Image 1 (tube, rainbow, N blue to C red):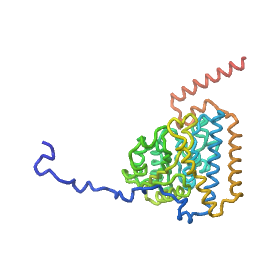
Image 2 (image 1 turned 60 degrees about the vertical axis):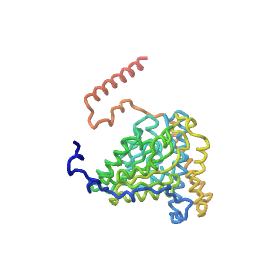
Image 3 (image 1 turned 90 degrees about the horizontal axis):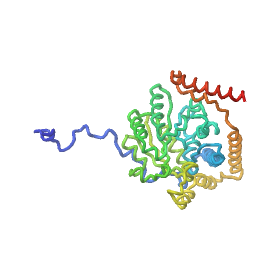
Length: 379
């Protein structure tokens, strides 16, 4: 006999404890991506912000082009370009206060340099010299993360710890649409919601997880809808609209800072170039699809607004392009110099105190290097 078959145990409806903990209606994202450019609402945007976004977008586009060229020249092992996604990247870098933390994925180099990290140091991981070339604590930027979505629980942990300590800190964690299929994504959202951690999740939905289109990853109405299942509000935004991206991210950061808890933001954008230099994107998408998205280019969208306000003068364009070229020239010059690498660095920064196994391995490598040096001197 089952529990429901016992006399007096049957109930036509569940007991009151089933009632939802959170009203789902305010958590649902809009039916269409939020945008400002091309609408009347953009008239309230600060001209200074528009010009800064424009200069950063131009620099970011040039940075992507130069890094891609360095890859073809053998100066970088790999480079995942964010061309076409610059609005997401720049807005993420500018929406945070100095005391906040950024947790980027491997494609988020532009967000990292927008936070003030040296452009060459941001490429060190992709060059293969070090795991990260900058000091995360100095810049409050976690290392560029190559495993999918593993940075998200780290962001939640840091944000939760900061709140427990009474620090006024927000963490912004970036991930691609492919990363939302990883367990780390779901675990991070669940912990963040339960703890009401001051963290913002930014999903750049660029259409493909390498060659896998979004339709083969999820049947959800949008990735922003995934927040509802965890009690997190979802925002759907046009990822090529730099002004809308900056507004939505800024609002989410301030909401988190003032105790409102986490927000899940889906930026609808497109990866115009291949996944990396090792990828042949023509195998899984058409040229017509790419060209359609080029017509929705984030720089051109912002240029149209600046022109309509009379802010995009020849001097503004020249200044932005010249600054970008100077950055690219410095990047080329420094990246063309061979790095001075010490094999013993393999054992640095692994543990606070080297384990006995690590000490043994370091001694073995030291002996092999010394033997090679002695042999060269004898010759």
